Image (cartoon, rainbow, N blue to C red; front, side):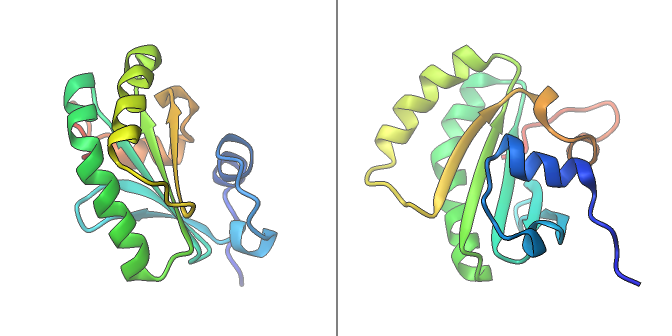
Amino acid sequence: MARLPDPELVRFVRETLGCGCPEELVERTALDRSEAGEPGLDVGGRLLVRVLIGDDVEGLVRNLPGAVLRLRDERDRRGFNRVRVVVAHDRLGDVAAALDRVVAALGPGDDRLHLHLLSPADLPAALLEDIETPGTREPAI
């Protein structure tokens, strides 16, 4: 019997991230982790979603360029079409200003890599549970 898709994960991929993937791919969304431990989603073997989260704005921003390059390489190595990197933080304004500088420093765009800035409250519960270890909230980058 086929496993039913998690409606919250499907809604997150479709509505929050704006993914236009075919329905048959989105219905196969599953929790996934990178080799470096970043939590995220595998959307039908075509779209890779990774979540970078941490309490320290400066550390999150400092590590972002290396994390983005590593995740782009993971996308290519694993044969995904695209990667969506979600940067999740409670202080969106502080992170947004710093992200603009980081994106400019990354150089020419990669149209198969997308950055999203979200509040952790916008992440689906199943993904949050996969991110947080009881009693800690270490940066996932």
